[in-house]
Amino acid sequence: MSAVTQTMNTTPSAAPEGELLFNAIRDIVRDKLAPLTVKIDQGYYPAEVLRALGEAGAFRQHLASQNGRGEYDLQAALKAMDIVSQQCMSTGFMMWAQDVVCWYIEMSNNEHLKQTLLPKLASGEALGGTALSNPMKYLAGIEPLLVSAVETEEGFILNGTLPWVSNLGPDHWFGSIFKVGGDNPRDVMALVNTSWPGMELKQLAKFCGMEGTGTYALFLKDVFVPKNHVLGDPLIPYLKKMKAGFILLQTGMATGVIESCIQLCEEVEPKLGHVNCYLDDRPDELRVELDDAREAIAGLCETPFNPDPDYIRTVLEARLLGGELVLKAANSAMLHTGANGYLFDAPAQRKLREAYFVAIVTPATKHLRKEIDAMAAA
Image 1 (cartoon, rainbow, N blue to C red):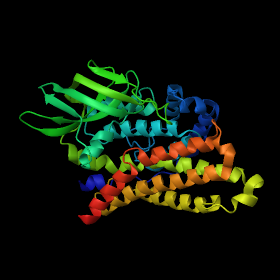
Image 2 (image 1 turned 45 degrees about the vertical axis):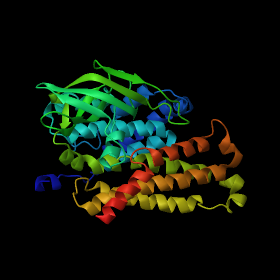
Image 3 (image 1 turned 180 degrees about the horizontal axis):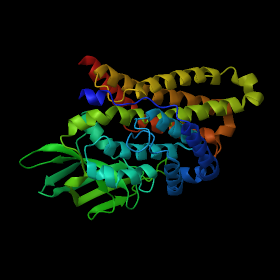
Image 4 (image 1 turned 120 degrees about the horizontal axis):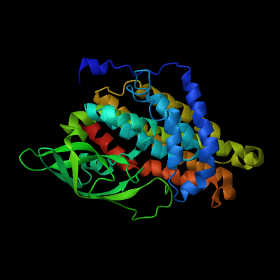
């Protein structure tokens, strides 16, 4: 990685528009998202909320080319995601997917996509997902790559299946990694549209939570991808450049859910504090752990292009910590709220299901521990 890349400005500015952005997001959460939260949890895809968040600027904060400040402000992107995830982590998760599909283009050398599509994705006019669950497991030696391609002079013809891809619908975008055969075998990443010929989306499962996230199985049969949609070729240098940001951007989901769990514990203190005092993981203890986690994540966000293996390992550890702490906080919220937290539409039981999603979404807890262990042994 060049010295120029290493000196890219990644320090968040003290721009006054920051609080205006976050206040606008709070307004969207209150007026548009909160009335839909239970409906989303049961399967409603809130495209109108995502577009409102995009119009407010939530998806452009980490993009130096789009935010007007010329810096990679991951902290602002995470704070926006945190605010939304406090109310509904399904929507927070879709924010992450949208942030990352923008990050794919921002980290590429593809000027065509930067000029034509990135502004639409950053504003929420266009929506999309990540589709890297299978490729990340493939690169970690957990499962085979499920999409293959034949290269032509004009592009690539893709075939295969991706079982879990979120924040999708008609005319949505996603990043696909595929194995190219022929005379020049290699792995390549490109941006694909769900409405292109040969693409089929199917909802094959009903989940216990996160149902409103536009999650589909993708079936690709002779899908043509033009070469002006390639993101990474060669793949590995591209992935190394964007990996830390990809993983760090997930932590906003965790911190938002942890915050809301602490608030649920605090809300019942006047009524149940006399008996909740006998529980472990009290809200004041969780607050200290959350503050420490946020501080550590903020420090890592300042240098997302640091190639040092120790830095990448610390990023993985921070993501692992988020998954572990959110489970602890959600479990505590259930115990602190008691039977009321077990009601069908209670926030506490929803937070518990959301927390498990943080721990199992790629990179999952076991995936992270595998990678960290491999790096320690290297």
